[in-house]
Length: 429
Ligand code: SPQ
Image (cartoon, rainbow, N blue to C red):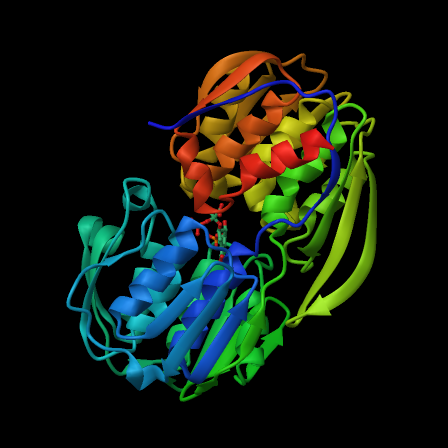
């Protein structure tokens, strides 16, 4: 088991560039794999999750070369995918699992998908049920809800689907299957989830129709190879935005952060809580808005976070809980049941681990209530194999009296392999 200890720092100052966006890196590789021609990716996130995506598509017969943040994918179109002779191991990645199932649903061959212990507990019926309705044959534990999953694709039919959850993985999975199905596929969600699939499919030459909360594609569409530049991951930036706001005497600039409005809820929350934050160099990269974000130590106050804001910051809630513990007053997080089906049950793990550090925090059915003004104390905590829990605890450690020792800290490499290096860079300056 890997263990890391974090000590209190006097201040954090300087400029860093956070790694490439995880959601966009996955999509760049998958879409390149089904496109015709050679796709090149710049700014790719070489985190474990995205490396799992590369390994799966290599097993599907696609020639992919990765060198750090550069990836070259020799796409041969949908027909270029081949029946894998080995199981497809998605590691810890829900995105790889659900989006790849959408692609496999239309391929006339058999594949077996497995992942780690965390993936084995995450619900897959949200994609396997609609994919079955489209015509794919899928089997697996608990009637196809859990990995290992076995899938045999084939000629599928378009679907009109009302998703119960605001999930980009459900939406993307069905849209990908829809691209090779008969007729139209439409997905409606209860609130807008991240729209990287829609934006990137358009960049790859696909026609995508959006009307309110409904996205549709026509079947029979091919993708054309592209050069994709991946923006910095706002979900990774969130850890340093919170650190900048809560560590005394700090000023941090994060360069080239992706600020797609479906992902930028953390910026809204920081502003609503009173943080001193500035955006500069706002521009577009690969169809996605980016900016440099500068944050300073701030006086914060508690707020309510709920409704349509939740899908725009769902992955940031663990570190938002750390932020809220340092605000004046109470912060209430509601409508966030989806936290229960992430790498861990993030309501339970945030509450249990922050309680160990001295935060007064209660779990609710759909979120948590965090009392501000906590004086954090050192303790041994556990990531439980969840990268975002590990990083949230490390950020708390920067202001705790006494060491915060994080068990299973290796999980952080799933999305941010250079996380501890970046902390030291900001400490040294
Ligand atoms: O890929 P994975 O494991 O599902 O990763 C997480 C994360 O914290 O990095 C969730 F646990 O991000 C998801 C996110 O929560 C990535 C994602 C995407 O790229 O489409 C969408 C969100 O999940 P969902 O289920 O709401 O669609």
